[in-house]
Length: 432
Image 1 (cartoon, rainbow, N blue to C red):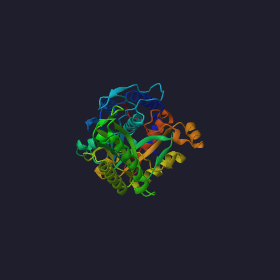
Image 2 (image 1 turned 135 degrees about the vertical axis):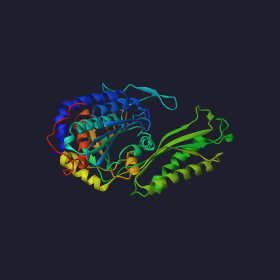
Image 3 (image 1 turned 120 degrees about the vertical axis):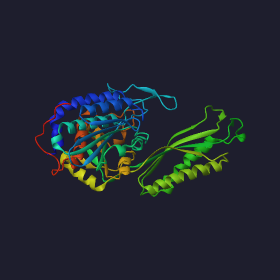
Image 4 (image 1 turned 30 degrees about the vertical axis):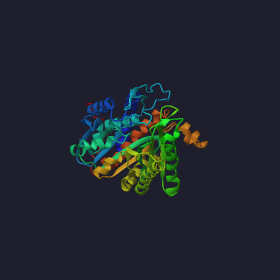
């Protein structure tokens, strides 16, 4: 039996209710990207109670906990903390009612409808097990609570804040994410598991005029409409059907009145790819088409391009993933499966890339089993509220326990090497 998940079994009846309470508190109190002050304090304070050396405000609001336990590998475990500017519509008794002003001054709802509250709770629970059962493993653990994943700034901000100089280099970086899937299942994949994501803002310039005098204007609304339509031909006509690529225009804004031709129009678009060559082709095509449509409209100047966010491909290390997959199968049996790549994007891989060490990322299902089975039987899985939906709400049990099992199982591949770990009778340490 895996010594760390065996330790979890010993602790579960006491630990899971405590973690459920922490989870509900985090869910009620979400914070936007790079503003996770309270969340960081909750996680940092908890790590300190478990005997971790704790560094706060790493990369603005990031938290790093360090637990040394003799000779052995160093393993980094990562959880993200930020929430989304989305009004929650789950109807849960512990739903968020938080409202704040965003960077543009508009009032927005804030909610954890991506699941990062669960990620934090998982890592806090794992930290407790590792601290109280040190006879079961050997090595060093870095528990990293990262800000700003949703905007692609958090991992890099921690790296830029001297993270690599301040903490030991890990042998492997591990992370997980709750997704739509039968609760209690774990999905792993070698190689590409998440796509690259590039978000751009493109401002098109025209010449404003009265709506009754269009001949005196250069209409940016028409320019933007033509551009939006033409951009959709990149995937359909410039990318091979065998390559993965998506281009979405999520926002098109121009003008304030129906009888005024505005001065400019702004498109916000998102690109998802899994191959660097395809990514480069897509980005170049976006720039070419936007410039060409502006020239065709006789625009007074070239369009203005601004990068909103940029996420690299998440490409799991093959050998490390194979080792974890074997451990998952031993722990979860048929509930562990090989998943397909997902179209979402993450900045998790920046840690492994910058440190030049292997990294592995996997999924934990969070959908009620009966609900998932009914939707699957009806061919309606796409109707289930997904991450970022206002109605996304993982069931707490068994999702909470499964995430703890998954991270402990993966970490044990390195930390519980029989030649290194000081195995003994599993008994919890005294509370610190």
